[in-house]
Image (tube, rainbow, N blue to C red; front, top):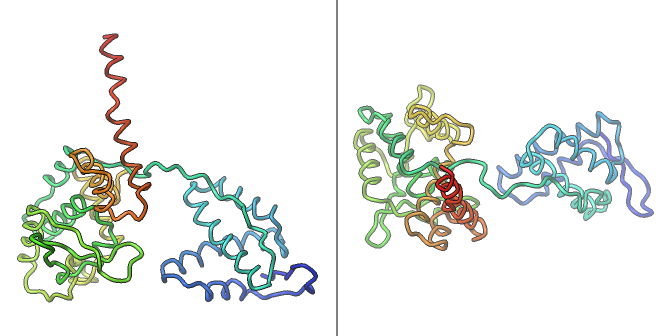
Length: 308
């Protein structure tokens, strides 16, 4: 599609569809972020084209946002609007188009977690339901035990190599490449039962080099190769279902929430939980505390006791 240049007294011109490509090329971000922004901009340009808009105004941006709200969740709306705002910010900086998206709000996103944590009883049931009589069972048990005790993300599990199992002080540690990091500079301490589970899996798996993935694929197409975040998420979801916990609010990310919640419930401080989960902002960790404050409020039980 074409976008006309309109800024001050600048002569009105027309740009071809390479405008979006020029913006994407300008971005100094990680490949996944660039890919996400590129995908998010496509429906915006499609919206303009479908409505015959060649010189978008602030009202057009707001109308586009409202059309997204009618279809998508708040998090998705926000994911689509943020690149649009950045695009017009860049366009103005380059003298190509005024920033008509400035101060256009996205969608109000609740600070509550989108996924649920599991209770101590529930996570025990999930682990107990795994048959560790096979290599797959040993692997899946080790993955879930590691994620729930160390608060790992699926990407951190996928990136882990055998050689990342090292020591930190008097502890066995797994050095990880955290979210937004370029190196494996952070580590989590592995509790003894979890280390035993990982070693049992590795021993059953057989000889492997330090540079090979800590958890390997067992599928026919990628036997022994690195697992994807999607496959790890699928494994966790299947194991939840096997134990009788089948809910849209229970996913692999629930293990991370479970780690934070159980650490606080069992005496961990807010700062310790922030360090465990590697939150850059303690306000993110505070969400766990707010949830626990409500969970510990026994008002309903007191009222029921008074009545019944």
